[in-house]
Length: 179
Image (cartoon, rainbow, N blue to C red; front, top):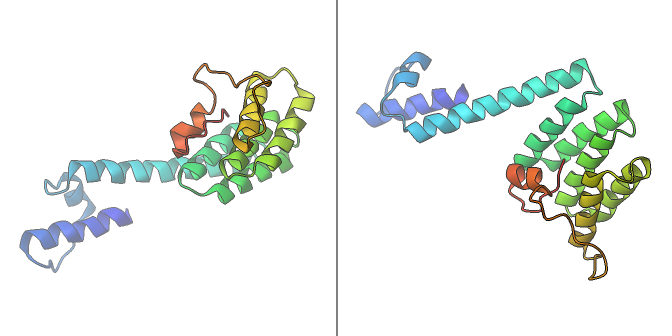
């Protein structure tokens, strides 16, 4: 809403110098002078904030809600707020200790931040519970590769396009862990 109000001043000042009266929100929505791309960015930003708020509300109601925590962590990481993402995931792990998806998600964020040894410890912890889990195994191998520990003898990560896809889509970091 604030972005729209500030934009109103720009629209009005462009038309006839500085305006004495700011345009109403209804006038802004229909304003022809507002760049359609700008309108789309504003709508997207407002929607993203609403999504994050809904996810935070869901976590307040159920602190063990992994289905809310992981998308919230992705959104925070995409906004370049990795510490906030880690806080969300730490909260989930307090409410649902040992949850494999939460362990994996936290490890992905740690890998994204270059904290590979910490990430690998979480992958090992999760793999101790479910050693055949392909997502955990793949992310663990990728973490090792990112740290430079995988040589020619070890198998390469899966090349099916899934690995690190979620992370690279949301954060544009290019490391591509799956969560």
